[in-house]
Structures are given as C-alpha cells and as structure tokens.
Length: 379
Image (cartoon, rainbow, N blue to C red):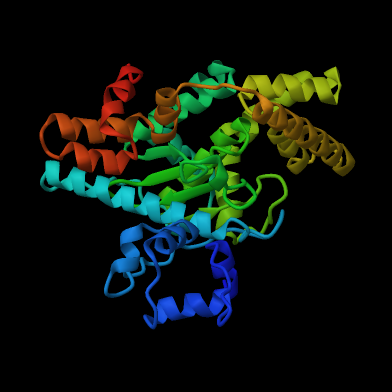
C-alpha cells in the first residue's frame, strides 16, 4: 500500500502546503505529530491498537504465516489488511491459550498427531488417522444424515482431541467481513494448542469440508491460510492444498462406500441421485457431484452444469439471509464463533483463580459481564 493509499484509507485530507500522503510521511518519520483524532483514524485504518502508534519503536513483526491461497477465483488481497489483522488476532489468542495450558499443568504433553504426517503420501492414510484420533467410525458418521449435525459432531470430536475450532469471518463488525474467496480456513499448527479457524461467511455446507481440510494441515504440521476451492482449485498432486482437499474428500466420502451407494441410486436420474447421496453422506450436492466427476461417473458437462446451478442457488440463499432481519442471540453467536473448548479453557482458568477477568475478557473478546451467558449454553 502506498502512502497516498494509506492516507486515503485513514481519511487524511490534503492541506494547502502538503498532500495527504506527505502529511502521513511526516507523521511516520516523526517530523510532525498527529492529533489524537488522527491517531484514532490511523488505528482504524491499519487495524492496530491506538497504543501501537505511541511506541518508541514499531512492534516486532511475527513470523510470516504461510499463504497457501491461490488466484483461482479472484484476487485474494482485496481483504488483505483485514485478513492480516484477523491472523494477528488469532495468533495472539493462540499464544494466550498456550500460556494458560502450560501454566496450569507443568510438563503438559504435546499432542502426538500434530505434524505426524509432515511428508504425507496417501490421503487415505491421513484420513484414516484423523478418523481414529476423532474416534468416529464411518458407520456412526453415515448414520447422522444431517450436515449441521455432522459439523457439530466433528467439531466436538476435534475439540475433545485438543484442537480449538473457531468460526471467524470478520473483526467484530460486518464492515470488516472477509469473503471466502480470500480466506476459507486457517490452520495454526502447535503441539500444545492447535487452532483451526473457519470463515463464518462461507456457506454452512462448506464448513465441514473446510474443518477437515484444516485438520489435514494440522496433521501435516503446516500452519497457513487456505482459500482453495474444493471444486475449482488446482489438482497438482504435489500441492499440499490439493492433498488436504483429497484427505477431506476421503474422510467424508470414502471411495468404496461412495461408489457402492452410487450404484444403488444411479438409475434415479442424476439430480435425484445426487440429492439422495448428499443426504446419505451429510454433505453438499456440489461435493457429491464433484466426487462423481472425479471418479469418472459423470461427464464434464454434467458436472459443470450442476456446479453452476448449485452456486447460483447458494448466492440467492445468501442474499436472502443477508436481507433477513434478526438472527441468533449475542451469546449464541459468540459460542458458535469461539467454540466450547476455548470458552471452557478460559472460563475454567478464571474459576480456578489462574487468570483475571480482564485477561479472560481479552482472550475471548467478550466483556466479563457476558461470561455467564456464554456458560449457559455449553451444556
């Protein structure tokens, strides 16, 4: 971002003597000191705390996170500043949780599955290992027959295994919403407190696939941001993103069981057969159609026709939801975003007197007066 672009974003105006960019440069070099109101504008523009601008030196930059994103759908840097701020926030939250866990239990054991497959060769092997750790056999998974239930069960199983799963798609306001084309998921691999962040602005039907994709990243020990579409992304067999997609696909639709189910419904007609399989495997119709296409069961034209139709339906559904007034309560939304594991870990530390309410509030991003409301729905 140029100085002029940054000045425009911060709402800095030209003066008779200097352009907005020149004024910003003077502030950065210390030649002039901005007013408090201008500092507040800068903080909002850069998505940084106001205190940052009063430090003697710029804050130390964290290790850059690996960017696995592609340009398959559109340019991925439209939401760049907001996304960087979200990544900083999630990494800071993770470090707080790591500190909590290590402070509470001396010699805390690292999770053995983090980085277990740093050089994976078989999606089937990784998918089977994830299934074993999550303790969810395919028969039990198949019996669920509901997408929302499957996601809820997988999230719970992942959290019980030690992975913190969050749904985040903005910085706390719809004005900072990040489109799924820029970011679908984020994996922060750590042996003590691995984090998976799913973009809540993506279709709910995509959340399960993204969760498993990011778990594959955790199993590979690969921290990074993802936006690869499971349907239109690259199929390079050496590409980690494509590999993680295949792991997720194999977990949700194991080849043997999927083809067996397909043979039983293929005479229904393609549209009806896809609907039946989507219900049976608790996944989206697009995922079923794509799996059939990749397994050579339907023609190219059939796949692309179905994919475009499903995309159009989803966009219409999304627009209707955005236009609808009301929605879930504040506490319901926060529980969904933060996940049970994070809430229980932080509030448990508060109850034990291990941390202050102020620190807990900072970690959760929730005012302490709302803690009881968060607890109420945990069960």
